[in-house]
Image (tube, rainbow, N blue to C red; front, side, top):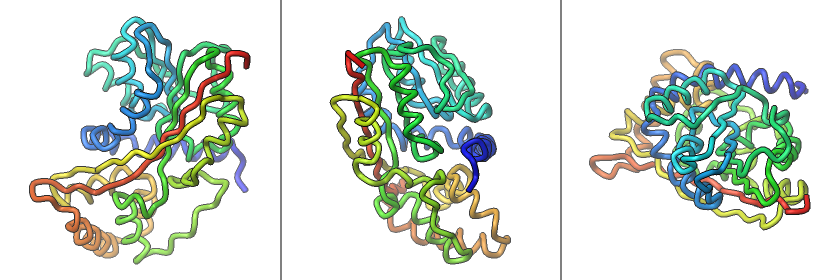
Length: 284
């Protein structure tokens, strides 16, 4: 069993390697995940002077969107991957956002003072933390009393055709072992109540969770394949195991299956995430 440090180093290497794909497909990824970001922000209700912490920021969302709302405050973007945060910094500069700073760090050892932030967001990061309970304790520590946290995770694969289409096609060519429950994986936190239980155990109040629908919208089945094969960690890792002939068979199978979601001018492949929110007790 690898140690937490080994898992974190592996995660850093994986996400550094994916950063170019995320930057290339930024527009489509941002559009797909926008409903999740919107739901999280609506729950957090950041005020103009708030100091906000975004954990597992990747290329910057929802932190950059929150930065526009906290015009007199700040947003700190954190991630294990310096390459992903470099993309986030370029996106902030391109959008003229100046109240954002980045910090490479592990979510289970946040380099911030107790009660430093008014709110915290963790969009699609919990699934990859070696010790989610420790991360939750750190979030509670850096939150001000009365502060809010909202996270999001993917639900079950069968509710996320946008990724399961590709993984089923890959499984037809190469054996894919089931994910280990204690290792990072995309659907590790799919069970209802899993993150909410961590929140409650860490002393958060008003814990609630709800599902959010998303659509991956592309102009064609081929564009869908191109995007998925270049930015989704599960697919990218699995495709490294196959030769060119097998990769072409996988591509053809994915394109054929994706046509079922064709709406004419666009392809809409659905998915589902779950948001979880809570409030730090005033006496915690």
